[in-house]
Length: 219
Image (cartoon, rainbow, N blue to C red; front, side):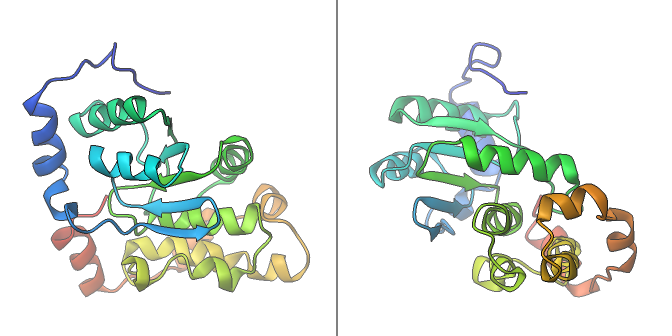
């Protein structure tokens, strides 16, 4: 599902209030968490319209919005900026506090194989959902090691593995024995992935949860 500007017309100043205040965009004015993880594959936090123009200047052709379609000002401004810059906007929903299931992984695999490069994928902060999708790109497309994939979920990108978002690390690490046995991630996910078991075995740290959920207010 995706929204269109016809369905959700621009609201002028209210859209900017949504982006800058409601979505904490003022915190991202000088901090972009933007990194090229492989040639033609970028990750970042939520881009403002001027960041999308910068992305176009870098040669990026596609923006992948990992927050999913949203009927708010931030999405409207992003869509208009992509249209103005000649970029394609793709909405793909990923959760930061849940183990991805087979459908999500198959969808990510199809997306990576079909989308025009160079592309930039983003969430709100560029730490968690951008991190897991960067890890999945390495595992699904480049057949990278689990250790290489886990580097996409690190403090370098402001990911906190001791918080609830650490479920993403636990999920990637759970694939390690299957990878060692020569099983692809999709085959493992289709036949052996047990999200409930990963969830039950994962333990958070109270300080980390308060930091990520209450102070940083990550999605």
